[in-house]
Image (cartoon, rainbow, N blue to C red; front, side, top):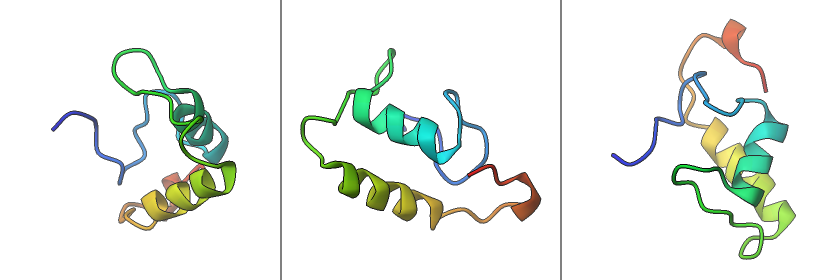
Length: 64
């Protein structure tokens, strides 16, 4: 209940892979802490792939 769903195309800071990577790495104001010091870059890409596996929406709206 803290954050927005990750299985849609509505992303506050951009839903493309680069934007999601930046969000995980550096965090965002308003509640998303940065994880760049805790998680390696290759692990961030694996997290993004995992998040993408939840998407069940319209494939024509995919931007990543």
